[in-house]
Image (cartoon, rainbow, N blue to C red; front, side):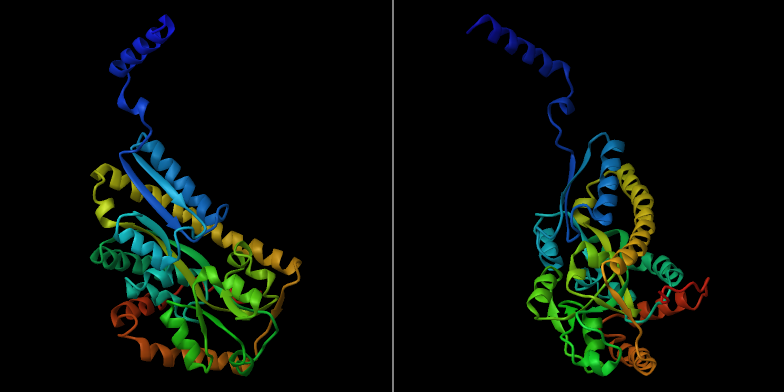
Length: 343
């Protein structure tokens, strides 16, 4: 063995006794593998990356995250299956995806239920502790809620009446029992598809009408096939940052506090930026040729009336009466009345 090689070995041997283990390995003590449908570069992923970065820094690297973006781990159902077998420890879920596990989580997605962000914030704040308990009862931790925002009916051709909507090939998320039931009650036959399948289905003509927020339509490229937008929100779309309770409960109490505090900080900022992004995206869509279409007043009245009929059918079945009543109580508290409908 050469003198240089012997010297290197001696130095390495000394370092093994002098340097702490953290200097040799960057592997965190608590690693969370997290998946999301949100694409890289989106406002949702940026805020989550900021959240994970600050958690890692404040825990001195003991908490780490590996993020799988853009649906590479599959849709919500696939993500949840991977969580159950320990392949993932968490995910950014849509309201429709995770509501198969926690049915009450779908209640805020009832079409035409909420009309302003003031209403959204009141209902969300009121229901969040209830949601957290129900997630915990199912072996999950709901750390924060996320949002797509108010979603609009977007189509390849203009339509102003309910009769025209009934003739459209209308998409509905394959696991969204509320929207599917509502559309069916209206006389619409929805085409159930997972979110990753929507864009190619628009491009091939399998569907020609979808529902999304302005920013979501751009980030997912749906706007390239949907030029016409009904000028009234169809509903509100949201999601949640969810962890496996088994993995989360391994954290010591001070790290649990750290996760909660950072989630409150970063995901409050996410709501602000999501709403800002939707406003900016609206201007972009108009610049790219999107056209806002005013619905027929009679048809709009029928859409609102049908909501009450569908809710009566689903209440106590698809979601609990208790969660619906809690949502209505929060809505009736009053607020600033600022609407998002007028564009």
